[in-house]
Image (cartoon, rainbow, N blue to C red; front, top):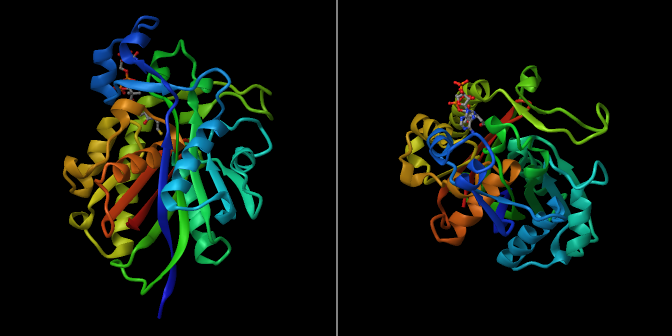
Length: 325
Ligand code: COA
């Protein structure tokens, strides 16, 4: 029996031009390059220019993903943008991206799962493709977190950056084994009891203002290590493989120490982990597609390899996706 699977047929990324180093932040804030690097692994982050919107970042990444897939706007019937920093409260940033690209068919909507947003969006788009409801899907993670940071709070503002990454999904047939190409599994979780540990203190229904990011960093760290270990175990078990079978771990990039702990738990060595946090900081929903795009672009991830994606974010939300590239 043949089954339908979604294949990632193109990746693209976009980072705003302006790059801000830790030392530049330390000039205005009670922090040091040494503190930020040793606690997080971050050296620098990109920050969107005035007037540069989440949809602009998303559109640039999407264009590159379409080119890589050899498709045009006419081939796309689904646009999903994972973002916690939309252009406007409504309409969805995905509709602006659709308009920018010239996509006029199918549907477009945003997904809000903060740093797990890309894994949520990929899962939803994968289901559309498997059910035959999409023949060409753009899945984008795009953020301008610089707009919701309290630049006086050294415990949070040094951690995040702006950027966007995108992938194209298309249907393909296979026998349905772990050796066949495509998205093999997705697993999503949320537990709203922890919503107050990482949140934004504003929104249309509360303060009518966008608000600023607030976080209990230590608590988030502890939960991330536990939840991500569960997420990677679940993906391995669902596919009947062990950590040794994984060619690449592409984790959400929140903290180098969290990434290393998850890799250790999985049993993969650091040369099999795609790390961008040093240059991008935490770009929330954009971090996984940015990292994927880099590792596909420079030839590290190649056809037939087993790639494991995982993320955890506000809510809490967390999840994984296993892909035979
Ligand atoms: N520069 C210098 N000192 C800083 C600082 C900064 N940018 N930010 C915090 N500090 C200080 C704190 O005030 C504290 O000082 P004190 O001991 O005098 O009170 C000290 O450093 C230790 O702070 P703490 O919060 O305990 O540090 P930590 O080792 O837990 O590291 C994080 C802080 C935020 C880097 C870490 O908790 C983390 O990465 N958490 C998870 C974040 C995350 O993943 N978020 C997104 C999930 S998607």
